[in-house]
Length: 246
Image (cartoon, rainbow, N blue to C red):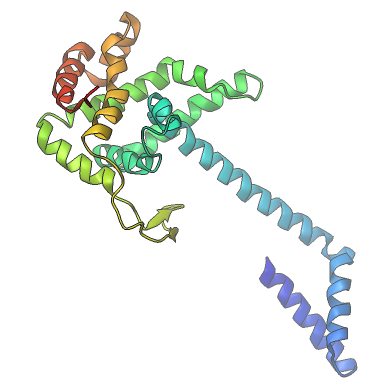
């Protein structure tokens, strides 16, 4: 859009230069004329509409990512709010989930966004996140992810060692999209994720599944093909060895 304006300014400058010696004052007058010329009204309106489409698409993309991300993280909200866990771990958690699901993450993010949008519209434009988390479809998405996380720990110690390394990673580039990154200085140390954080993190994600009601237990089985009591109990028994001393 800027290039089009520069081209128009250059054409105007060339035309003025044929009439008389060109000066900075002439340039200033040309710029001011372009700002208010009715000939440019259509262009400015079209440019504004184009920008708004970009903004709206970005907002939709943000909502899409946000819905799935919030769904995965919401059981850990108290731990982050109380600063028992570092919020920078969230990005590494998402990397762990993507390593388990690959491109399937995109489809799940789209599904989460659709559920959130449906709830928002039905509520008159306000999205109640509690209602979103309680929606059976959102629960199934969450159960599907956590079920896969639990199954990834079949060989508990091997998977734990890998997860700890992933969660300790302190990236020097923050991704804004698939191909846009912002560099930031390395802090010089790994993120805090030892035995204590390992226990808090996975206990916060998994322990609520140990007390599912009959309806949610059925949703879990539908989403994962597994019995929640069986696989959750085994995981938590392995996890107990990392419980912090009182």
